Length: 281
Image (cartoon, rainbow, N blue to C red; front, top):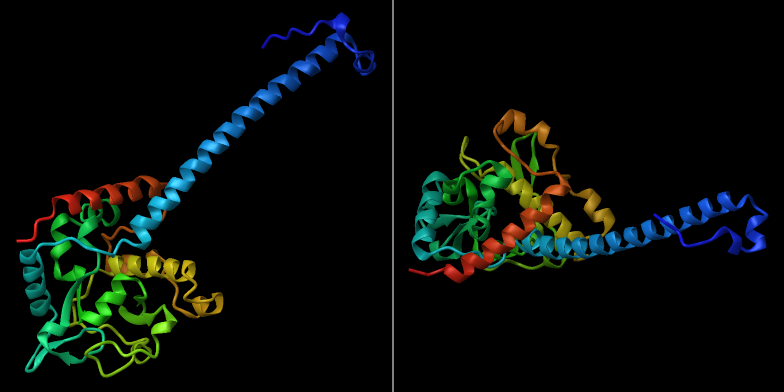
């Protein structure tokens, strides 16, 4: 970088710190530093704008991912039949809720997707599952409709006990504790820590329920449903090495932050396309 400063025009106060050549070199370095600082400030502003977008998109795609899922009537009916058969949920008077264990009227039990239809293509990207796995019984839970509503809102979730290879129900929004879910005889609080019911050898995809639980904990913290002590008292998300190797050797669970921006945008775009194209048959 060239400088227009001439040595014979330098102030005496600068000349006292060194020769004219040294002073010119110093001023040149200062000018270059100022330019670098301006460039860094511009890069910082661009980074802040990008991070703001990432946070916005991530919130929409991850924390509210379970809202307003998109499937057709035919898909829902086939999915429901598959869950009833595989989870052996038929009872003399209706269907068994896998959370409460209660026998309810068939109309009161919902076949809930764990990983929502709105993010179907992300199954392969995130979890090494195929598109066909979207409507696999392992991507579903039969539960009282009143529980499914709170599951989609992430006010309730299931922690994974890798030692027992079992899932347990937790109420993350403590305002629900004394409420009684519709069609059930017990309160949300009485359902706390209940083990998810399923036949031996037939279990929901662990990686999907673990992901929902991790995301629900984030939402519980950001929504102030739980204070730090209450969060600390809940089971933690298990280290994947401790259960994937034993139970799901082919499983994939994303854990790198750098992966999120592109993934979150893809989820939002996919959701918009699904909403635009949806036709209920």
